[in-house]
Length: 255
Image 1 (cartoon, rainbow, N blue to C red):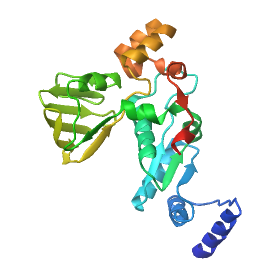
Image 2 (image 1 turned 180 degrees about the vertical axis):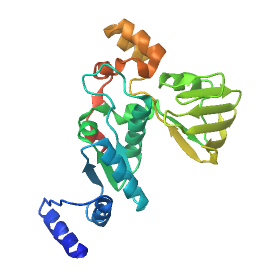
Image 3 (image 1 turned 180 degrees about the horizontal axis):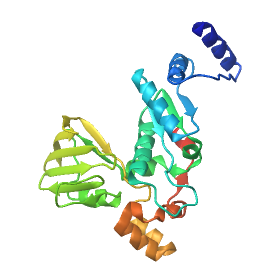
Image 4 (image 1 turned 120 degrees about the horizontal axis):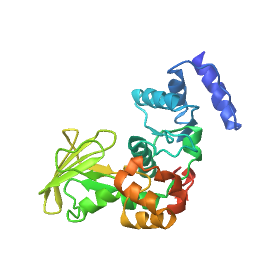
């Protein structure tokens, strides 16, 4: 029965449209898996974040690659800032969309409609760490601070980093602990959550960076808000001015 229905769906899709209803739980992932070779990549729209995350989990359990782009966790007219963990997840998803070719891209209406950083700017802001590669260690603290990470003298917590001698430790807003040993500017060892790694890309923790140029542009519009964003980051509420400070693009630039 399943194979027969699948053939019907494929036939209808060749004509441009197929409607499938009444799929319970994880069966959606099984159907999408069968359609992967017929339509790839597949962009899937889900009505809520909860459903999108659940489908992402189900697809990955089936060995499929899926990237979920969340929307902001605040209403459109709310003056609060989105959580830095949400902003980081969004920017990491965008980076992966630009770099990889996933089987599935999962979106909600809000995440699809929201304009995003252009790919070139996202790559410029991100810090790529490759074992055996080089990073300008003297400029690294300024770079990390400019993309929303706070410097800590003690062991860093989420959204913080520390640089002591040739040892860098960064904890991303979603809890990934990145430990890097340098010899000069060369990356000697890289660990992510205590496991040896070859490469890790630290994307910004904030969609509105806190570098000097961005803060200058923000100050021209609202000086007090610029100072608050410099000090408070994700608590500033400055993201409402993101389109006025940074040239944003539609999500289609990544798809």
